[in-house]
Picture 1 (cartoon, rainbow, N blue to C red):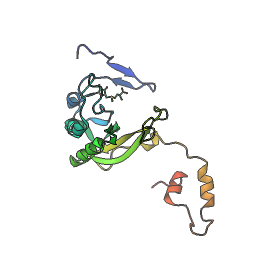
Picture 2: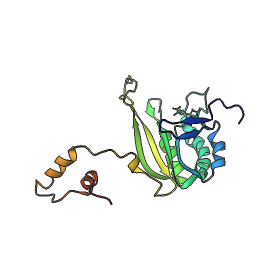
Picture 3: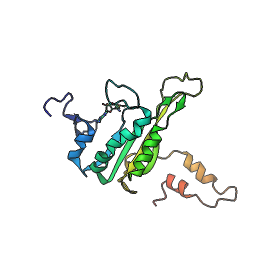
Picture 4: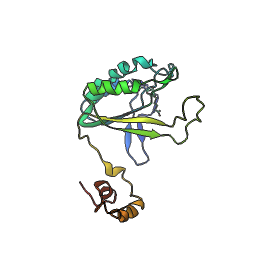
Length: 193
Ligand SMILES: C[S@@+](CC[C@H](N)C(=O)[O-])C[C@H]1O[C@@H](n2cnc3c(N)ncnc32)[C@H](O)[C@@H]1O
């Protein structure tokens, strides 16, 4: 690619050197068949910013997203993951479910829904709608090709809070619980299963 608008290399704060490729991911990913560990995407919102990228009507969004299915699926390793950050929009006063439709369609194609997370936005615009509250989150769907995708929880693990000590101390005081459950054991670090 001769006339890149962006630098070809980017060095992260941790020192990782990233190659930046500018192009349509459906095309560019073909050169990485079976080599990709993780795809994280925040796809275009439906019916928005038509000057910048495909602006798809919510009713057609799931169909449109399926044009990414094969390139994404083929690029990922068998242990790879796809994370989709998105939120469906309100159409005529009602929350359209095109995001759910998209996930259903991906499941039909063989993607496994490992989990749904949310991106919590602590500083969203104040709510001014007559029928709903402030909108402060978006979905982050974790999809994969197998039930055991590569997952390094240690990389994001945080020390457990002090609450575990008092919780463990109180367990059994009411005579019904003799020992900590699996969740408390895990949280206190004494459970490895
Ligand atoms: C909702 S924005 C996400 C912005 C991004 N999260 C950020 O913080 O810059 C959608 C992005 O997808 C890009 N995009 C749209 N269609 C694409 C395609 N076929 N291949 C690669 N990127 C695409 C758009 O250029 C845009 O930057």
